[in-house]
Image 1 (tube, rainbow, N blue to C red):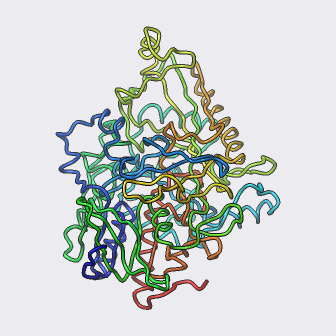
Image 2: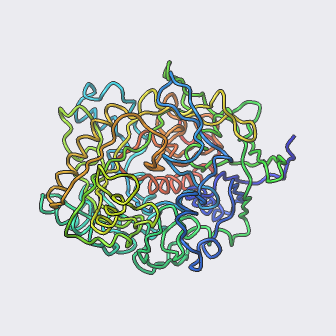
Image 3: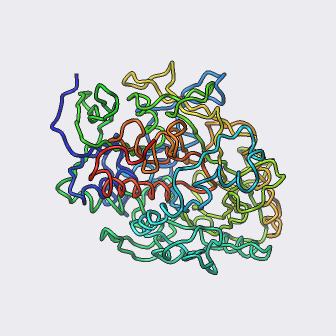
Length: 588
């Protein structure tokens, strides 16, 4: 039996970007907040200081900043007819562990979604007709719109100090920015990062072909900046150890560099690290959350009562906690009934590799969110009439830095070891580059999350089961968009081009992205969504579930900026509306 503790105003589960933002906003409101984090406390000065080696073996290969599968894994399969098997090591995606979550080891690319993305089904129906949408797709509107989202995007920009150039400022298209973005209320907080040779060469080729290149919006700070909480950050030095690493310079925006330094000083905030939440507790009616039950490092269970429960973990754990807690009806793909686990989606990774004889890209110079991109072939920025698919991708050159162990650019046909492999490594190390296309993933009826009937974690709880495969829609989109990338590559006159569109089935082995979304999605209809536009559970009004789990599908952008905006959106609704009149904020 769990030992019951004194009640608090608010419990927050997970202390990454979303949890830290909401905890800070609600402590400002005067509420007492206790946050629970499964992993350890992480701090830049202790864990990532300049005396610490950015050890590729430690952080990239052995994944020190990521959740260990011994703590909790997932099972995976491509379709409901298969038996899911557990992932023994993280390949396809990298869940975070500890305060800051996956934001500690993220790249930092921080796009806003486009206005049309929030009403995708309605937009495509109005423009192309309902019959044009492939039957396999289960697209949904978000239940919110650009006017509601934009102020919260701006709040996240300010707290993260994002670097970039506005492309649409108050409805006026700006030279040098992304002309396809929604209208922004203000310019980026800091100037764009300086660009190395590869992105500059790509932007020149794209411009000559009539495209509009722009600096990739970045959570890597380009100049000294003090954010809206009074936390100061320093400029990026292009060290090349960013993705999968913490940042010693306080240059990469994360919860531990932008929010927690202010939050931990508040007397009405407390954090419980190394404490895994087992479930959200409900009253006998199942319509009110009473708190959470967690386990400490000694194996002892504790019950923490609270008036308000806010779950802000990684997508997988958000959904798993809801399934384990009995919140909502588990989704059944056979009947298309239920909302908990529904509309799981991923991201569709594509690239074109270029090999030159006369270039020196100095690939050791890099950063996770440094580069130039174009958006002409993203989402619905191009005419999809007659193409047989919808969606698209963000095309960009973002040199993350050549890791000493992992970076071995060799052309097809090169042996995997031996003297010829060494010769090709030397020949191509300085003169190879890649153009990426991180593309949309549109939900289908048979892509969903559920509890595994066979495999359990170390505590005896069912693992989360992923049922996912790339749809024919997304595979057709990948071929088309990668072809457009190859056209730009040919204009750069390399010796050799290697196009790599996404093909075949989803494979858990190679890393693709950590942009897993859906499973507890937001919307205007309780029959097809689990939370309303304020991220409030339709079934349990004093429960808010915030994160990428709320996305009904994934556009061709990185999700973190939208996760941050949704955190501010939920916190604003709690402060303005819920605390004055606790209960449902939207009528079902």
